[in-house]
View 1 (cartoon, rainbow, N blue to C red):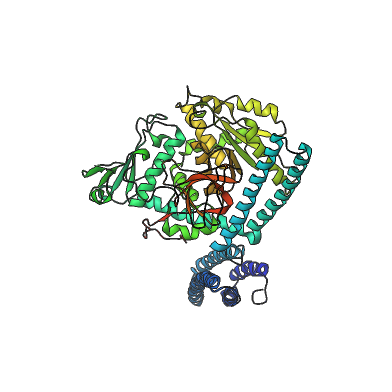
View 2 (tube, rainbow, N blue to C red):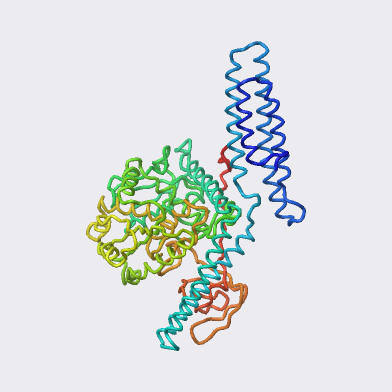
Length: 593
């Protein structure tokens, strides 16, 4: 209640006051009284003394921030009312303008209030969210373990196969119910909307920092870092190469200059397909220049030439999976994998298409019928198989597509099972339509045909990979192999479109990684003995460099304390997120009003 009014009555009050303002200025006084009620409401929303001190402080700070906004709006309205009175005294025709201005300000205040009341009445804490995520991860890892063990029993012929299958089905029922419970926990009190709002807010800050960094007022005086696009690999790999360059530019507070003429995908350069990285600074004309080296030596030069990430030495501390220190505290509350979110913001800035390219991509989606709930499946074949990744049949992907829709159908009966199918193998789409008629496959077979080795660097191939990345990122869930750069790019961009999409995937091989990253360590939170099956000893507090998740309850890694490599139960560990002090760009306001 708000001064005896409900929130709906508060909103209606704005409409009522706006109407009477148009009749006579003296009723503005009623609006000021109403505004006082809102201030009282904000005061009453501060948590009670029964809550923890830290939570009270955070909530109080938030309430005070909102009170300050309302106070500023109150002052503005008083000034407008005073001006309106003076205009009425002298019968000034400008009074109509003042009335319109006041009405416009009231509409803005109404919008501000509606956004405020739509948010949860409490604020999530890092401890609370980490506990929820850990419980969800442990549940998933338990299922991976049980499912793996039951499949092993069936293969070994231990016991009655029908009994094991029945047990597996029963346990799957428990798992589905628990997943529904976790989904409800994620959304309680509109927490999912809160995460989305916070992600957009922090993402907007990062994008504005990039704009500031990349568009210096005096290009000739700006320090620069130069990145050459001619890296001999596919589009996803090249995009990650530019992303590493932009991370370096951001961390060193230097404008990034991209050399892309003669690019194998588009000889005229990156800017023929994507927006330029800068509108004001595209040339590295400064005379003082050096190659990457010791930071103390590089600081005195105007221009630094970056090597490819494989040749980067000495290694800087800002390399992925590091996250800017000033962003981490807020980021870790709303997102389950901060490094992926941070990389996603980098890719988001780079992957801004030219208007004509974007129009073509959007039209392609309409033509294919991309709409509603969609699972993205990326099947990478051709040059990857037996060199960088193992072969995976279509059936292996579809197992996880079915799991997603079976789970979702408990809450949304009779949902259309749409699958966006991307592949560099043109035989996959006909196979999918033949074997899985209950699914609606969204695809363009000409994209698969253009992705073949013989035409991979053509205009058609570039168009195809852009379309695939755009729509894979906009799927609700991804099934792919993280050994593929395209799959990882899609997953990274996906994070910029949701509050927290860190769990919206299933990889058939690797865990997420960034090519050229620093070591990815996890912290052991519960000990486990070694045994003869390749399981190593771990103790609480150990740091383990993780090499991969076997998706059977165990991960593989090397214990930093003992130097021993082996398996360990995944649920007995948690991620170590490395934070690094980077420029905070005080010239860019945290929020834009």
